Image (cartoon, rainbow, N blue to C red; front, side, top):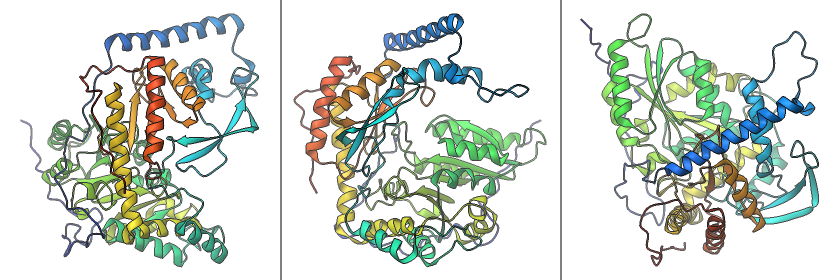
Length: 531
């Protein structure tokens, strides 16, 4: 007879103070704030599926590429540029398939990726031309070929990636006052007044008790997760979680169970069965159960179904880790992230993680939560013990941009302009007949291309019309879901978006990318509200 193990009531992640205390008073709204409205919890968004004939053509194109690569290398051998030398007695550095894919697939598309820039990645960006004399094995920059493009490929949600303005002036002054770096970890000599001010600003911005900051966003996940969970712990991870989360979970040694993307029914089923069965080896109760999700998924453009996941967390006494790298600053009526978007209490999220790269024009990351949790991380995480602390001018950039969002009308206008740009751009793409993934309010707008050859065609054609975009393909996406990913910014004007939409419409007809089977009204007018 199977013994049913009842879940323990929710308890602090790190033993000590209670993490479930409610806020005594809500933060007063910013000037010009709009009243909250009910948010749709269907956060994945509704979109067309890949047409069958397109999927078959995509698989066929990969088969042809692989077949040509096999035949070519069977006759002429592996190109000398990719052969590993001085490796006798050692195992190969690269897996055979990985190396084969790089030589025969990625190399052919390499001209569409990693364009060097010569300016801040703002609403517009200067792209330096490149040339290759060896079939894209290597490139040389052509500095005489510099073009200014509308930038739809950079994470610059609130438009703070700029070389003028109050935030830039504050950063320059910080360089004059404190220099460029502390050259030391936080545990030694890397903590200064600006770091203390930064963490106080972050906790005020998020609405948490305390916060800790780090110099690298990727490391914020992969080096802190092992300090939070370990062996005998269970982690429920969304299938589309970021690579930094996946690496952190591998380093932790915890048991990981993956649930379908944004599928709360699947999550509920997995966590219930895991509690009933216990640890697979000992059959004893789990030491800790942690649910890991993201606020906005950077490849899908979808947003997490947070209210339902919070309900599951409370139902089973689990903890919740929310990665707000792409949602903090970009989502919510006050720009506080996905928690603000759903009008939830930040105290309902045990661990709030985010980065300063996407919305605040800086670098680094943070973890926010209870004072007990943050005090524990200050002494236990490798990110704080060994890595250099965040650069003082970068810290000042974050402080200035967060203060602008919290206390100025300009910050509020940026939030509303980003939301308006996201909705306007996404709905117009659907109106033109493209298949677009994601939620209507998400600043990440993926347009499906489906075939690898069309990545290169689309990106290069857009570049020809001075529009910089980012193409994404396998293995970063499923093999039949190649796409181009647009990143909206508060710095984009309606004129910029209209110009981009006009070019996309032309290129879409040229490459036959309008796969949507939905009925659409070509005379429908998408409203745009200027702030």
